[in-house]
Length: 157
Image (cartoon, rainbow, N blue to C red):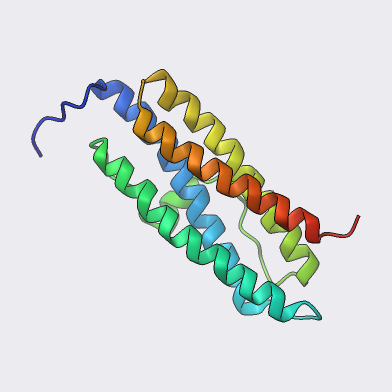
């Protein structure tokens, strides 16, 4: 690949890309968890949760592509294996099939974790004067904050 000259130093691009890799790993892990819950949810809220989880994993599938492409735009290889995602992600995998309310609780925490990862990544992007990455991260943060709010509203008080 030819030299990248977009006004961001190579070291700054590397730091921003590393933050985006964590965001990608969290997003992909949350995607997989959401898809798993979509397949396996049961109970009185089955239809509502099944459809909502599908909306969420579909949105996440588009997001991971956008994040990975931004990493590539910065001249860094995007991670793409379960092993790499497991090493980078702050979201814990879930064993077994939890009951529906626990699924909602776990997904709420997952979205909140992605927001925290966004905040860390945003600082790196802002420090590098990388408006494109900052905008992407800010957009992702808003989606996850809203999704976490909606999931929390479904949980018993």
